[in-house]
Each structure stands twice: as structure tokens, then as C-alpha cells.
Image (tube, rainbow, N blue to C red; front, side, top):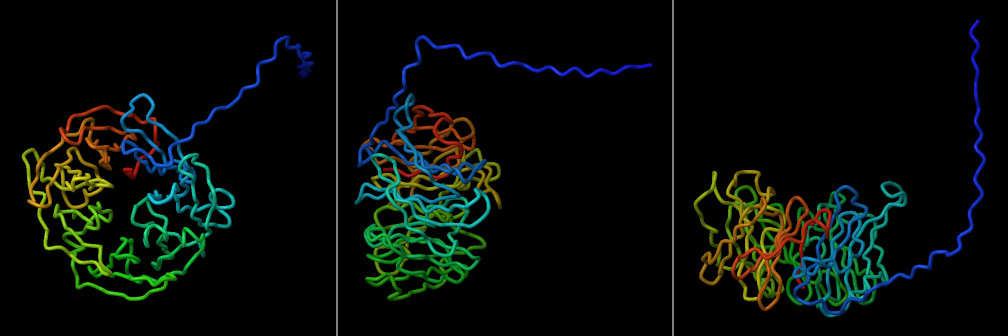
Amino acid sequence: MAIAAMLTLTASPLPAAPFDKPLAEETGSSATLPSVYPHNWVIVGDFNFNSIIDGRGVVVDVTSPSQPFKGMFRASQFAETLIATSRPEIYTAESFYARLSEGARTDAITIWDKATLKSKGEIVLPGGKRQQIVTYKNTFQFTNGEKWALVTNFTPAHSVTVVDLVGRKLLGTIDLPGCSMVYPTGPRGFTTFCADGTMTSIALDAVGKVAATTTTKPIHDIDRQAMFAMPTMVGRTGWFVTFGGILRGFDFSGASVRPLDSDFSVGTAPGAAPEWRPSGWQVITSDAAGRLYVLMSPAGKEGSHKDGGTQVWVFDPASKTRVAAIPLRDGGGTSIEVTREDRPHLVVARGDAAIDVYDATSGAFVHSLGNRVALNPITLTAM
């Protein structure tokens, strides 16, 4: 006869041993940043694709390969970021859910102190309708001398909420049927892209209501020469580049947008298969002298406009000529920015999350910051 036995072991806890010399209490340390950031710093928008509720903005010193990280602030759920120049504040347009990824939704603009990177207030946005797309700079913009902010919404109808950042209050929402993105225009207003190829400019009155609306004739071919939605600003001139490589300037200084008679092609260069085209996410930037920098791929074709590029071409818009071509290392990049230093740096975010730094004047590689400062760097903003 088989006999089964069950053995139960009960472990007695060991008595706690006294510590003759307890560990000393640790004291934390913190640093305060300057309220005006130096020109060798950039803000990296890290949308943290593996956990988008934990996106962040990262303050980075691009000249320091050993300690580039200066600090970070929260930028949740494909947030957009604005950095004020008239006040020591940073703003993020964010979204939150009561149970992390579900439950009641709250959209808000969070106000951050530049020096401490601590939140100092928020403005709750109405309706849970802030546009959530992979971060574009032109879904959240200043107007009225940085006193107001424009937040784009998608329900899927498009609209824009006007927010008084100084008074910390909502001014109203403007419907934008068939239009999207915002580009600050005139002293107090904005321009938006429309699906029929036109641009509509909206002037606002002193309380944020629509004072005047002007729509252009169709000025961009969204089927054959669609423009990348993030331009670079040279003063009040916005320079856009199309998927096919046409550079186009628009004057945003007046009450309504004015297309400039300045279109020119990025041209060609040897080594393309099949042709050079702009490609990436933040594909165009500029320096303090007004030169334009465009991220280019030699494998350009229909649908390649987000693939990233292997060279940065530099253009003088006055002469409509390319003045330099900067080859990129290690597979190229997806987003570019140029600092406002006396001798500027070209900052390149790569698809593997590394950030490389080049001398924008000579094109020489300076150093890589590696992938230590951001998990998914998507936008770059110079100071």
C-alpha cells in the first residue's frame, strides 16, 4: 500500500539584529536653473512612446557631452510645450485620465517655473477635446505678445481655444471647420491651414473674440506639393518646405497671411536613389542670420516624408541657393534645430533616441549626447 505524506515546514523569523551605527540620514540636493536660459540650451520634447502618459520636456545643454541634462518637466499624453521669453515660465498643454489610461479626462495648460521646473499653476481646458497627435509645435502657440495661448482641438471637428495666460482664464473657443494648425499672425491673431489648399487668418479683438476673418485663394497643392506643417520662423516670415522640396515663404506680420513671391527648389545632388527629398519630423530650421536648414533623404519618393534624412542642406533664401550640405553620422536623423549662439550648433535627434551635435558653420561633427537625455526626442526648441 502506498503511503503519501505531506510535510509542512514553518520558518520562525530571525530576531532583528541591532545596528551599532545606523546609516546617516541622507539629504537631497537640488539645483536652480537661470530664469533666462543660455543660447547653448535646447528644450527636447520627449513624447515617451512606450508610456505616453509619462512624456516630458527636457532641458539640455548641447555643448556638454558629459552633463547635458539640466532638468525636466512633465509633458503628458502627446503634450505641446511653449517657452516664454517675456516671463520666466514654460507652458505645457497636457491631458490626463483619472485611471491613467481611462476614466474621466482632464485637459489643462500647466505653468512651470523656468528656474525650479516646478509647477506653479494650471488652467483647465474645456470639454476634453485638446487635439492629441504626435507632437507638432503648431497645435499650441502664443499670440498677443505671449499674453495669450492658442490650443487646437479635435472632436473630430477642429477648433481653437484662446487662453489668457496672464489672467489664467479661458477667453473662448473658435470653430475651424476643415482647417487645422495655428500660426501666430499680426499683433493678435493666427492663421490656419485648410483642406481646400487655402489659408485662413483670424484677427482677434481685445477679449479674444473673432474681429475679422480673411481667407486666401488656394495657395498650396496638398496632393502634389503638400507642405510640412512645422515651419521655421525668421522674424515674422514663416518658411515651409514641401514634400517635393519646394521652399515657400509666408509673411505673418500683418493681420492676414501674405504669401511671398519667393518659392524655390532645394535642387538636386549626386548620390540619390531615386531622388533627394525633405524627410523626417521637424525637417526645417533656421539660424540667427536667416539661413535655412533642411533635413534631406536621398531615397525620396511618395510616402517617404517621415523616414528621416542623412544630410542637412543649408540655404540662403535671399539668393535662393544652397550654400552647404552637412552629412550626418550613424544613419542620420529625424528632427533638427539650430542654436542661437554666436557660433551656432546644429542639433540632430536620431531615430534611435540619440542626439548628435554638429558645428552649424563648418558642418563638422562635434559630439553625441547619446540616448541619455530622452527616450523619444521628437521636437527640439532653441533658446
